[in-house]
Image (cartoon, rainbow, N blue to C red):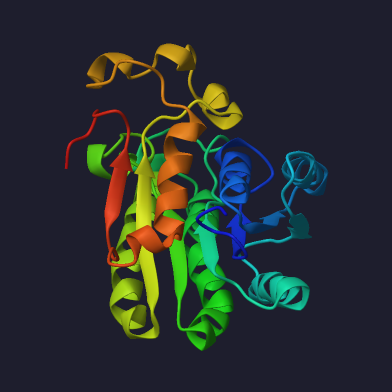
Length: 251
């Protein structure tokens, strides 16, 4: 049996990139997958990949900035499998963002980034919390970013949203510890996904020289920590932010 056998994991931003990798890793560990995203065509590919590999998965179209959609997401999981054990708040705006000084950013872009990257995890966590509380156990994993520690310039809306997510992680962990729920954040470094390749020319070499481990970061490098934080092995870990970047940031 896998470490997560019989558990139900909701993963947002599951249509591709790290989200699809997280779905595969959690399914391999035994979890049943609720893959959530706006991109239904790519979500179908994620579900197919999980099922072909022998796992169980369903897709649900979700706009994480919509309270109604996030409540629907939790309802679908409960109607299908009767529980929600794991939430991975992975959905976020990244590749399409403008890189420019904070004083030149459009107000609507700032608001859009904070809505998806910070309000979204809050709404998704609110949606699954009642089920986790009833069960007396749950794992919420927020995907932040190492840019919070580096203060990556010309990207203040993205960095601020991920910093806010780290703050939300800490506050939520204090509030739900008595309910048996652990809340942690993962801060990946620059990871080779379709989105990252769109953001950075020569992405395969970006930042490698700064790392203690001198190779490009892959989504699978982050997925192992997701599985660990979703498992019983991490039951005494909460409120933490763990950087996964090959030693580029040491905090």
